[in-house]
Length: 63
Image 1 (cartoon, rainbow, N blue to C red):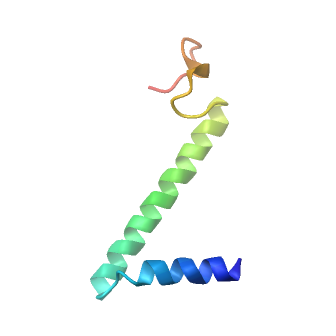
Image 2: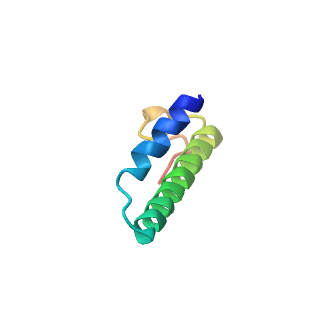
């Protein structure tokens, strides 16, 4: 786990040259993480994955 974390940090840091680059990367990383959390929460709440046909015409479907 520690090696995977270190590799991820190195991969993220290699594209950063300025403080602004770091801030932009952190903003995007946070945004993407929150989006994944919301999608997982919605799947858990509805009981099926996004684009699945399970929820169609049930009254419990995604818009």
